[in-house]
Image (cartoon, rainbow, N blue to C red; front, side, top):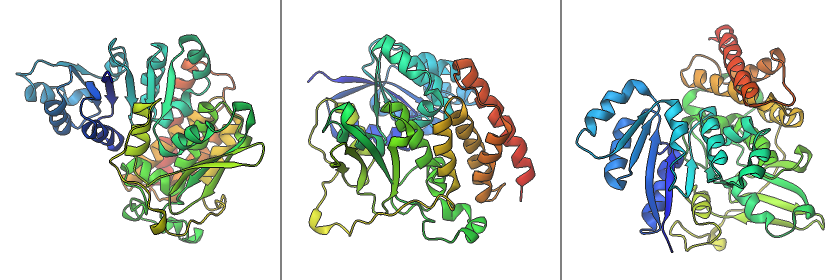
Length: 388
């Protein structure tokens, strides 16, 4: 097998590090051509010394001198800033661009990758949520491929192969329910940062862990599924599955349901995307059905987890509504992590931002970027009122 050339955006984050673990476990199968990070210079330098990519990109320009000093004697191209992150995707010898950037910052990088007709392995669900109206036409024009590397959409992708596109009835996205599934709604206002970061199943970055606690993450996945699989939101269902063994399911017209099961380890869907269309033996642990816990399922409580309800509404409305949802959520989560607002204010911020801003029904890229900018400004203003 000819080694695949990889460009990894967000290499110092949770998904980026897991991607490099997959590379480590399959020597000779991949060549890391480039790595990009936001600000973690120390880890980026360590990754450079191990994988020897030809280029590095650091988005946070204030740390440029630190990176230049650390690698002053190395033969490596150094790029800095958000625009260079976008340009970084244009490497002509890259087979797969892995976009593991956190938040809407990954949008333009995803769009540029698709414009180049490359294969995009995407963990940055926000870029598909915000850029959803743009991708179908771009893909038709460039023949680019988008491969999901989050566990739920990878599971849908794999399960959907059991039938034809016109036979699909519903996709069913599973959710662990997060750490507050059984906590009364009346106690949500007292939830602390430490409690919200204590996820019962997955080990993830801080932002996505908070999103999982509010179920905003599941809402983003609903909106992403509409884009990835070109289906109406009426065909997307969410079910709470605390054990996180079934990652998603597809129901066909004959009422057959195909599910994808595996241990809750992000390296499995990452590996599937990187090796696609092939499957390889996994070193990351197989299921032992004789030792599995009982598998349980329940409906999500949309009154308690209103972020999920708002996400369904935004997916139905379309246009720039998903962009406003995402931007307001990012701003509110950041404020919560800085302990400026209460846990319940995250959803309040999303809802009020959606109420205050006009939604463009058929947006172009400039409309999406403007909606993102205005939503962040509005969310910042709202947070000033919430500060506890």
